[in-house]
Image (cartoon, helix red, strand yellow):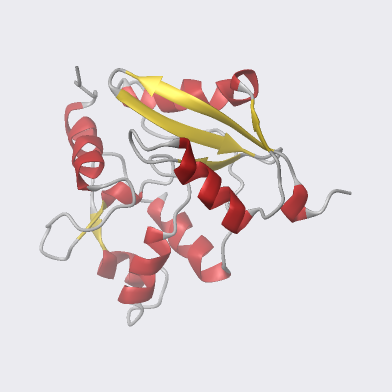
Length: 177
């Protein structure tokens, strides 16, 4: 059996309208969705930290099921994902990421809401850190978390990407040029 940190990471560049971002998968499922219009270096640095020594292999065909579902989401044709994930994190991070998946399409929750949902009401800052560590943007919808007052707060993909994703869900489609 292969060691967890030596598994192959397959990657592809997903292009949708004026968006370009890298996605990656292990044999278990989607493990990474990159920031909008960032370089390959973002994926490479993440993989080095999480899967030290694992080869990165470009394979558009292997990533096709993930590209299809993410593209359907960006086109406003999908509101949830059925693809498998390979989410590697602490038990706390996994609890937070699972809570994010419970936020309905088109709605937002605050960091406090997530902390309460996982029965850790005093852990708001830790919830924020776990959300910031989410490796699979869009598909685990950390963009749906906003400040207690409704203000947009940090997002690994940048506030512009977060704004566009929230607007997509409000409208039901991503209208970029």
